[in-house]
Length: 217
Picture 1 (cartoon, rainbow, N blue to C red):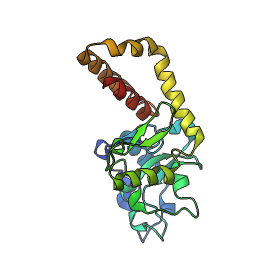
Picture 2 (cartoon, helix red, strand yellow; picture 1 turned 135 degrees about the vertical axis):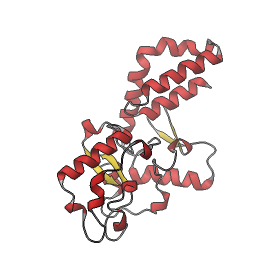
Picture 3 (cartoon, rainbow, N blue to C red; picture 1 turned 90 degrees about the vertical axis):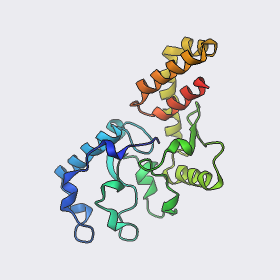
């Protein structure tokens, strides 16, 4: 999970046609959903807003950050601020969050469009995610709950995919990374900044970013 800038994408014009309490999500036509997906892709690329996997490989859905069910937040069904692009996997992310019987306080869930997940999480080379050191009790609780609610740490396949993506990035550059500690600090930071920019659009970019940030210190 990484920070998303909703202002970087246009609001789907089709949303003005729908009104909570009058329409349901079933009233949204496929052409409208295509427009919404296009705007979401402008904001976050072809990556799941939660696990960062490629939705072109793992399927996708238009995700309601706050559940649209009548017992939850039906008033937010057509709010642009409540929509994300999410993978279509049942064992994690949006489907896992909204599965029958799932219970959580929605205030605990970290919204990547309004908060910076880097303030809550640290990704390890193993593919696992820890609560970032130095978090206060409230942030630590929300980080732990977000990982549980979305199953971002408990899903073994996701941990493997994150670790594999990092390995694919590291292997061609292993000699450079071994030499970085001997570089002048300013040159090392310049190199890391360039790599951060170059990998920002990659799937599972956060594990690469945290690896690079470690090198810059």
